[in-house]
Image (cartoon, rainbow, N blue to C red):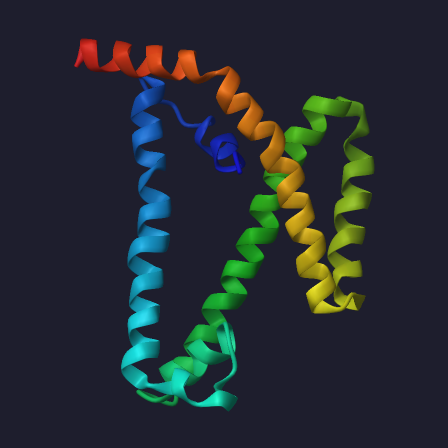
Length: 166
């Protein structure tokens, strides 16, 4: 969606292609390795065969519970830490975009909007909250795809420059 680039842009490197190479590792580890291992646990445990085993986190928790009673508690702790880090990261991304669009003097409005959105999320149906989040992700993705298209020549030139020097 282009939000990770905000974080990676703060890194101090000799060339932007170095940081881009590092940033490509994150989706690989998160998706190809972590999700694969979780899927492997679900399949090996066989809990997916039970109609009442749930889906998503519940299914994962049930799969880990087949090995040890403590694993669902570890999973709950990990999910809590991830949720807190997502709130912090989302604020970092949002504040960068907000301050760029509306200026530094509007930061207090951002505080109010962000804190209100966190608290109001507790009173919204989960499925509706997911639909709202998906729509916001779509709104972020559209300008990023346009930006990627417009900057494609710059990216190609940076890559060529990096590999000429190295």
